[in-house]
Image (cartoon, rainbow, N blue to C red; front, side):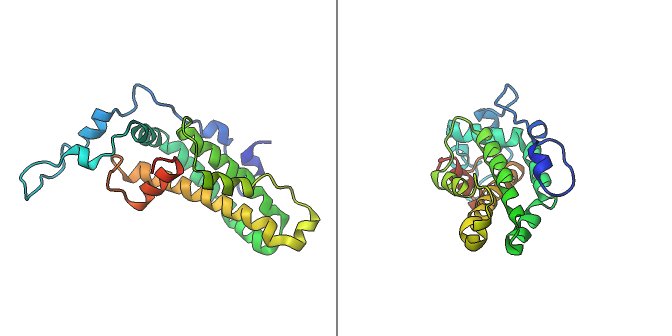
Length: 199
């Protein structure tokens, strides 16, 4: 059974096919191309010259590689966002409060998101807190005894899903809203760098 068929809501394409990530290639932005993106930046009115790219762009190779990977894979990431947004999280949230074992289905989506995020930078280990939250909220099988410990058993599932989903949303936002990896970081980029242990 595919992950997509296990998710509630309308049928969607098989995520492993639809979410094939692109690795670094000859078409990936280079450091020089990323630095060139500010060539048209307005001049510093006080000094009468263009800003120094080294003060604006975080040019660490591992950060540039992550940023390039985000931009190359933004369509697959956005497709995953849409797939999950087609009722999955609303249904999971409702099932939690409805005291339904169907909340356990969120675990598959959480693991899929974790794997996709890891695939953006396979050479990097994801943040240890994030991995612990995911571990605590996955790998569970419903048992009737869980009904007596509902919050203890199911709240970690919801927490893990929403942490993973939020990082996915940040990845899409950074890929679509940023033109380069900034040194002066908006919170969304700083949080994403924490996910990849780059802060």
